Length: 254
Image (tube, rainbow, N blue to C red; front, top):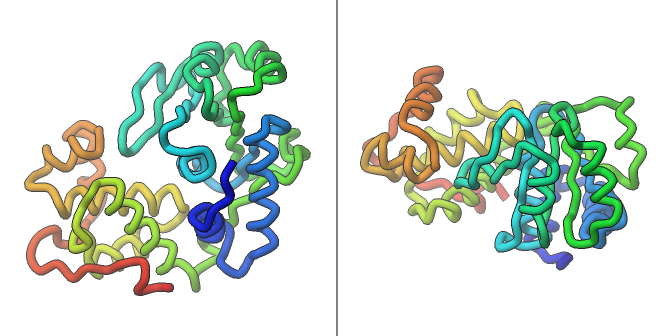
């Protein structure tokens, strides 16, 4: 695992820019997991799989496979908005060779006992367990789990968190900086900032919508159906998507 400035910066985004101790502990946890000496355990409110995927990319590299093993999703390929998934542990382990295999502990595959046995003798797959806040969970006794604090406790840093996810979305989609406005930023802060996963999803979708010619184009770039994107829009009153664009970048909040 290469510990670089990008990885440290992302961990600071997750854990707090003033929380140097937590960042150092997280780096040690990542090193243990990358060396296959322990599972990487992520604990936080809501879904932490997007965080696991982002850590994988920064620690091991985007070219290595990142596979989620969730029996509720079936076998699907990766897209811009979601990782590849395998319903069974055996299929997930095979697909994750050389990379990472991630599970949600509340939705383990049926063959998880057999998977756990295989993981003990496998030295080319990093195992990541995503746990919602539950201090009684046995995996929390593993070496230094990464505990992601709730965004509600980081209101002073929220604008910077949003801006950095915007920068990620712009880079991911190859979009111009004008694809996200100050109005978009204010909307995310007010309506889509209960968790890091929600901020990531909202910024990615707003950038796609703001830089595509139509709904079909935005949905195609996100790897989702027009119906699903329309339903997401229908549940929300979004900021204007046309007109003057006033670009906002991560540097504005650093």
